[in-house]
Structures are given as structure tokens and as C-alpha cells.
Length: 193
Image 1: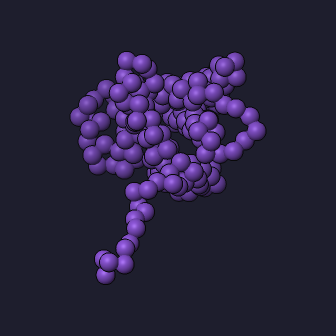
Image 2: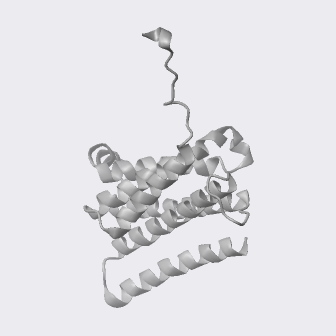
Image 3: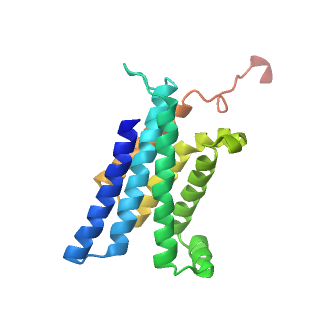
């Protein structure tokens, strides 16, 4: 667990160093805050999902990963995505719900970010015993990563190496998690023809 706390503090320090860099070299603070909180959230979501795949034996490794890591990394991911959303709502939309809902309904970037935020919020709630009824929602994490990768691609307006890697990684997680899904498999009997 010490490594989980260390990674959380490290991401906070990286975000703070980005702010200091912004003050010293006068770059755009909002963009730096967006990127540092967004990528920190994505980092912890990836850690949570890879730990979930390892603990459920979907990926074979020589060491054991506790389910507690899945939970703590998921909570960290929500903390950073909450700050990402708060920065967007306060600094970009000036606390205006009208602007917020107009942008969500008309722009793909905002819509994909909001869908990912809602998924993360539901997964965050399901991490606690009081909301145990939402336990099945945690499987949305893989879809949330895919939506988040589209959000990043829309934010940059082009696919570069980092965006392509994130998209490939999210598709790999989806494949590893759902490759044995029986919904799409069916048996055809000879009597049906």
C-alpha cells in the first residue's frame, strides 16, 4: 500500500510542478491543469484496470496483486478526474450550468468527458460498502478507459503516439476482459435450416 500512496503523492507533486512551471514561464495555466489532472486520472485508471486483470487471472504474472490496489487506484483516479471536471466547470464555464449543458449537448469533446466522469462517479460510489448494490458497475472501467481515450484524441484533434498507445491499451484491456463473453456466441442447429 505504501507504493499506492507514493504514486498518489508523486502525481500531486507533478501537478504542482506543472503549476510552478506555468508561473515561471507564463504558459496557459488552464491547459496545464487540464493535462496534469487528466493524465493523472488516466494513469491511476490504467493502474486500477491492470491490477484488476491481474487479480482476476486474465493476465498471467508471477506475483499476486491485492484487490485493495484496484480499489485505492480507482479512488485516486476519481479524485483527479473530479479536479479535472472542477477546473473545467469553474474556469472554463464560470459555474454556468447553461453553458455547461449547451456544450455537452453540442460538442463531442465535452460529451465524452462527461460520460467518462459519470462512469467514474458511479464506480467511485461502488467502492464503498453503502453502495454495494452498484458493484456490477465496476466493469464499466474498461469502457470508461475507451471513452477517455476518445476524449483525449478529441482534445488534441489528432492522433499522436501517446494517444494511439492509450487507445491501443484500452482496446487491449477490453479484449482481455471480455474475450470470453458469451453474448455474441450462438449455436446453429441443423434443424433451423
